[in-house]
Image (cartoon, rainbow, N blue to C red; front, side, top):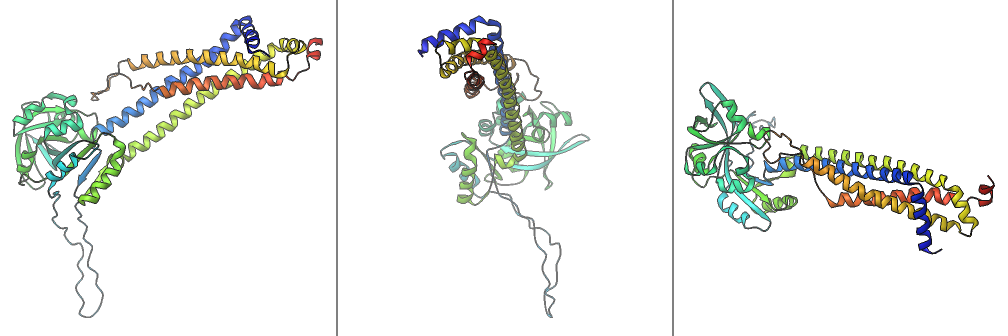
Length: 416
């Protein structure tokens, strides 16, 4: 049979039952539209949560793990043996990274490294009158830290330049500053676990939207924290590294550990719980999305099946005039392809429109400064999958009932 003849017959069938054709197309359209909207939004949420965790933590942290465990001596219970000593006091080991500044410079020159920030981190007690809170203070080169964590975008008040020009300056987490009841210009007494004390002035506040950071952390100049701890200018306890590609953090961290002998912690290890939650959310997203498509697929099948049944007399006439079963199947497959492709394109357009409206809808994220609307990912892969599913589903939904209908006896149908 000529393909043009089949196309003309398919077109005639589609136009003869316009309402039925429209219903079949809408079944494809809304199934794909909901699939696009759902998966774009859910993947956007997952990406947002992952980025929020990564923004507040380094891709690689290099540090010297202090081992305070000292086993008890074992009594061999022999004459003249040594005395048993239990619960030995731990050694006073330093967290210092030897040649830390030089190591940081060398790491910074490696390929794939976005930035490196050597720093001195220590526990601290913050005192403001009767208020006393515990937290951490990090001595940093604020320009390097800004390159890693984009602190300029995280500032709630003050400026980074003020910290650079003020040796007694302090930039605090917003929640910590609120608990201490301090603002820019107020003074805070900082005490380290070793008993060193210094009065610092608040010159700014920042917010990552991560409680473990905003509740406890403060930034000061590298030299300031070294002086508080009574250490020399080469004293470094941590090196934070950011990569252009976060996935390269694990092998690069292993390389650093092999070369320099210090412990390394990559972002995946530090955020195991978050990544586990992301895997669960991804699985839930795909389950819900596939369920939407499957439900839509059954609806499309039912519609196409009814379309074929309603055309059973037309099929009998076609077979009686010389068309064989393959010709009948081809006619209905052309109808299915048209319905699937047209309905799929319309579904993509509606799905994109709904996703776009969602992406510009205002969203109050509190301390999350990097997001002001709902997170949505516009990935062409999702649109390709949606269109492919729409076409394949309608083709299958049209093939099976048309193949069965093509086997009917035209004489019995016409007599009936």
